Image (cartoon, rainbow, N blue to C red; front, top):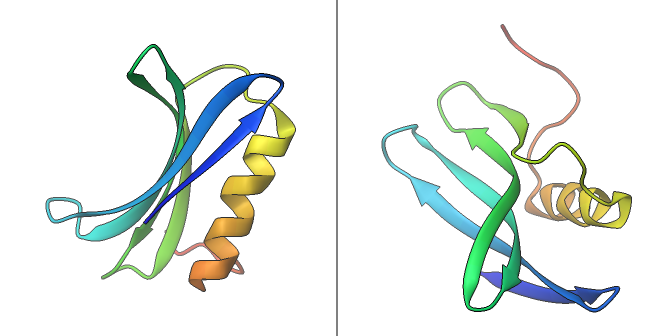
Amino acid sequence: MSDLRSIAGRQYELLFGSDVIRDGVFLELSELADGVRDIMAEAFFYDELGYVVFNAYRLEIPYPLIMWLYDAVLKEGWPLDEYKS
């Protein structure tokens, strides 16, 4: 699954994928510029552990993009109510 949005003249993509090594699935938020995908943030759901971790790869990410990623996590039905350490 991939979803594209344009905000303030910039192109962004939300990409769903699977990671066998980390044993889970992810939603990746990237900026698209000049044919290059620059990963900004990720939400990762660990299948075995049953929780979600958010990772940011930039110091500043516009709030509408964070909410887009968060809403996508909710649509996937991933649990956000507790963290198991």
